[in-house]
Amino acid sequence: MVNENRMVKADTILINGIILSISADGTRAEGEAVAVADGLILAIGDNESIQQYAGEGTEIVDCKGGTILPGFIDGHLHSALAASVFGNCSLFEVSCTQEESSDDAINKYVAEMEHFIAEHPEQAVYRGTGWDRAYFTGGYKNTRWPSRKDLDRICSDKPVIMESYCQHALWTNTKAIELAGLDASTPDPINGSFTRDENGYPDGTFLEMESKALIIDNMPRYDYTVEEYKTSFLRFQDEIALPSGVTFVNDCMSTENYIEAMKQLAAEGKLKLRVRGVYLLDNINDTARVAEIDGRKGTDNVDDLFGIETIKLFFDGEFATIEPYEQEAIESNGFPEGYCGECFYTDEEVNEGLAKAMETGLQIHIHACGDRVTRQAARGLAYAQNKTGFHRRNVIAHLMLVQDDDKRIMGENGIICNVQPRWMVYDLDSTGNSEVMFGKKRAMEFYPYKSLLEAGCHVACGTDFPVIPSMNPFEGIETAITRCIYEGAALYAPQFKGVPLGPLDDPTKECVGLEDVIRSYTYEGAYQNFMEDITGSIEPGKSAELVVLGCDLETTPADEIHFIQPEMTFFKGKLVYQK
Picture 1 (cartoon, rainbow, N blue to C red):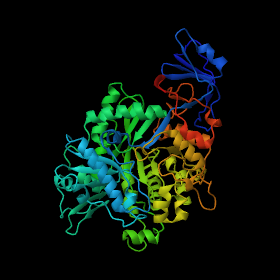
Picture 2: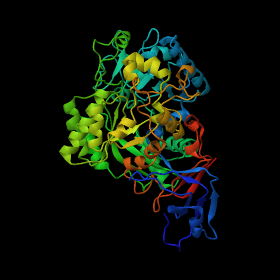
Picture 3: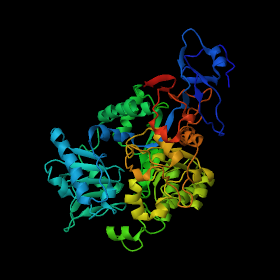
Picture 4: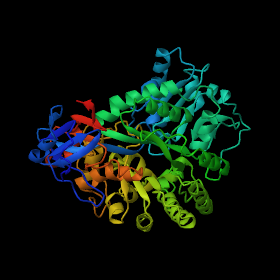
């Protein structure tokens, strides 16, 4: 593929590489060299043919046989929470064995926060991020929820607020509850819940978005300032995203201050990657919020660097499933017989609420894990699309469990599946949590991938960072191909080595090929964001988002792919990272 306009000279030419890029029709680009001019891909081809674009000022980059990829697109993460990663007490590294109890986990988390408080006496609000609710929901000894009293013993005069790693739960001390104005008369939220003591007073654990909002929306100085978001995002961009080869991110939990920070960074020319945010709709029945979003659309967009085209909804938090949880989990958690988890909405509310939201003309992005709510989301989107006539590349994210009929519905209705390949492994979370809650048969069927492709679905990838603290795409690429946890990863143990996560009768059923996952991480991410004509593949005329590796990805053993780190990352033709 060579551009016929021989008068244009390249700013940069990459030579001696191996181009690995999949286009819209599924074909692979052929070539070993790329010419870039004015931020766009001018031509691709062999080394000899590309030389015609070399001029006096052209920079020649020798890739030395390394793979040249399109910039990676993380279609579902929480870059706003980089502020938590860089500025909060990190709880991600705390771990427990199944021989330990909930109290052991609580004591470890409290010790981490106590140390952080001692080192930061100036802070008005103490925040922590990364505790794992699995230690308190079955599979461990003497399970109980964390209490405000556990945190009161290390700090009673300032609010302490600790977010779970999945961002679906808060654990607070009494001061935070007091400052938020909550007491025993505070009603339960429609979606979610909070623990209460014997007198009905909030006891410190708040589950799901509406419950969390009771604290967040009423807590002075809880959110980060615009300047704090700007500072943390620039660190995230330069220290995490670009070294990983990521040139486009979707933030799926955007606060107002974060949105303003991104608009300012874009206007100031400080973004070295594209960012998309979301408008959160905490309750699908909130028609006033839908009207507010409708009147706001387009007003937050700055060039092609930052924009919001999406409404984000949560349909479950604790995995609403079709079949009941395992009896052991039901008993240890005190659930009612036949418990299947809780959907936030009825099917009728979903159908009509999605139709109303869809009339804004914005894309819908739904968090759904259990197969009950995945069914609700898939069929609700299909209903709303047919009713309104709007087909805005709607998205369902996570897809822990999916029934075959619902895969077909998503494929037939153009619903995008956003998956997290790094989760597609058999590990300590599988045995300590998933198997306990759902049984081994269902746990081994978690996180389908290949069957979604076979159903005709568009499949894009994300990391859910910082739920997965690393957003290195090569970890996701390896696990999508092998479905095996690699040595050294969090939640690895020797008994899991070489054991794929897959149906018991066909363990490798959901493994995909290298080109499949590359397409999901690049072209499909661009497609999800209505940007496939601009980026997502290495083709003449597209924006020059390029990642150069120091190795041939296709000859790298599958179980060594997670070690790969990019040598260079280009955004709009400019070198924005060099190893």
